Image (cartoon, rainbow, N blue to C red; front, side, top):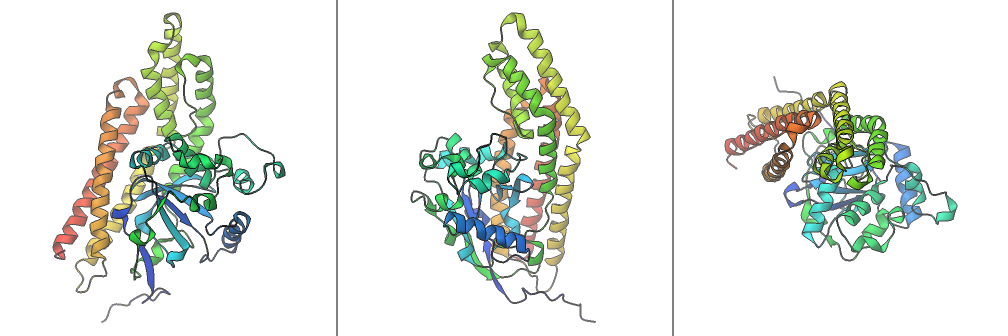
Length: 386
């Protein structure tokens, strides 16, 4: 009996798939939503384009290929470009910053923002004259402001042309210094069999487990930001950076350990006790918030996708894009190298931080999982003679 083939609206349809190997840290992705089934999403995207007199309504920045960081309604979150497509190349644009070192630094800084609140008020305020809406001070951000702030913090002069809170997708789109690499990154191809399980950059997104990471970091920020701020105010000689995300708290502890010598001798025991207590509270939050379990669920979902791909490779006519898999392998190899380097640099201080040990334990498992997935990718390529 012939196996039943599920029919979808994408059967035989051409779409635009990203070549993730051609993406690097700091690359900027602009999109517009014109294919969504969600009327509210279409209206919001159209309103932003009308208000800014621009082509695009959303901006993302690459942290490490294929991962992009974006500010959306749930907060600053991640999106894997490897699981995305576009209906029309006119609805996306990929821009590259001319200075690679600044771009790479902006990409690294993006990781520290994951879990930060999204500010809808700031988002709608940005296109309008300042007097129309009152300026607010909070830890929220919106998509284009996030991109601008990351580049400003990385040392960019180009992004100083427009104030961060006035930056829109249109002001980014109009920066002539940025290189347009859209046609290199996106190629027109026949829709994959699992296309409806992928996110449309110009339409509907599918649920991803990264939302759980964002929620975890948001809750962590609400719990620990006031404590971190209080410590920073009590010990100004340490010049602590504002910490408002989970990764920011890990960095806060690392900085606290490194700057212990800045504290006068008579207050050092008090300082150490407060940092130690903060460290314990962060560790407890990681355990209670099931941080390791969240990562395990993400890994499990990736493993499931990998096994489906492996099974497909045994079919007589496998529906597998070999070029896409080769790109995955190369991008993941670079991702692994950066992640291992980061882990090695953090490991030096793990003896003085319980939270850092917990974090590194989860990172090690994630690295091992990505490494195993790459082995499976390579096995599929060998099997199919690619």
